[in-house]
Length: 290
Image 1 (spheres, helix red, strand yellow):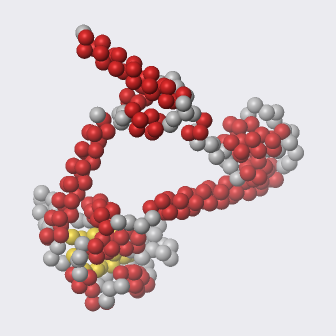
Image 2 (cartoon, helix red, strand yellow):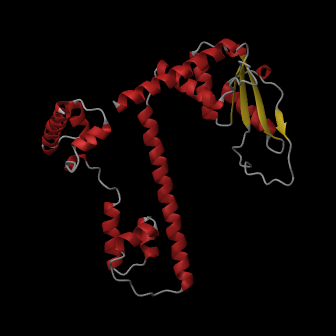
Image 3 (spheres, helix red, strand yellow):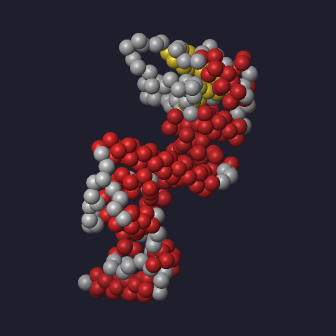
């Protein structure tokens, strides 16, 4: 009974300290580090009912759009016109202005449809710009890779996309196949890091027979910088006239298979490294729960 009481008192004391720090304007991370509480469930209980300080709240990127949408609605604009003006979706506009009076219809259905199409085009353009900006921001966050980081990335990349030994096929070999040129480049850089000589690599292009086979062979040869003698005969996928191919764009170049000759030792090293990553992740998960 005394032990339960003490635990209750300890929690209440810790909560008092956490609440006091919160009211001083500290963030969750700062409180966590100050009190050495690394369990999110306990931290949530300690701060239950205490609002976050204003400086930690992220501004809503759509607040300005919402204000502008309401102004335009009060000027008599329709959803389509507001969408064309602001480039946001009509579903968002509806939520923002539904309490405002509905403007009187002043155009034909054809005119309204034309405005709607232009509004949708503006929305798609805005979304694409946001998508590209998000990609640029994420790429800039990565920066340069250390040898250890590239090693771990390569192990995960191979274990996701490379050939693995099975109980029914205990072959220990290093084969990697992918259509993404970026994946191939990272894989080759990883092999360089491991000291695998390029002379040990063999390549094979695998592509649909109705595609630009010669162009694909040139592309992969230039990307890898490998001599033609390092490429095996291209594997062609037979065309089924009943199938409608989706991969018909100019940038379709099939897949490239990369094999490391005499790679059994390398395979074992990859498998062992992957086991190490899994064990480390499990330990990290247990530590975060305590």
